[in-house]
Image (cartoon, rainbow over all chains, first blue to last red; front, side, top):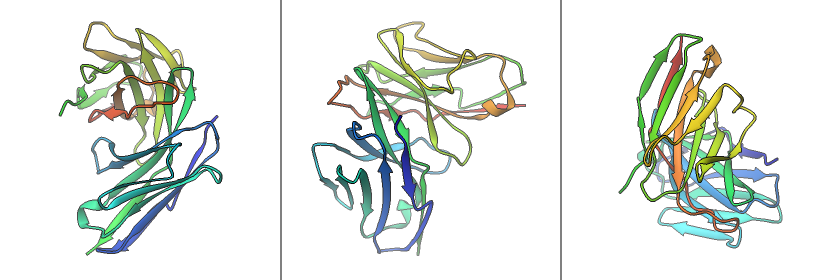
Length: 114
Length: 117
């Protein structure tokens, strides 16, 4: 089955700097890669996703890149702000028949230092 | 914006008792999911549900667990004979039509914090 590894487990960056979180996956059949942001005690919220037919996707300060050959994908946050502090999870879809389950990374705690 | 709603927000139960966690998915969504997150750990897939039957389930989802869509709006997770290790946040999610090459985003509820004493 699919396995998703996520690094680093904790990332501390100065406000205004960029943050990069990396994930690798094992199943080459995976074709959907969402990123979720989870603030303390709250629901995971989808912030960006990418499908396997695209190499990069951008939404304002957030971008995701996908390297299918290497089976890794990354989240890039530029001009970080205090409200970016949260735990970020990557996930990969493990597709079976007409449905899919998300296999999640272990999460990265992002700390934005003022 | 439509949301997935879950009740209760917090459930405290004695070990060995049965609990039912409730979810109301987004109204036009067809696929429903339950996930579990033990405190400080990753989110783990439990089960997916489509067309009134289970589509997939993980190793965690054993005979202790069951899901049901009792009416047109609710989606429930029942945990029988609860154990201490069942203490976790349980998230319900739903998504629109999915196909093998057209996965749709899953939208999560706020979760139910289950505490087993």
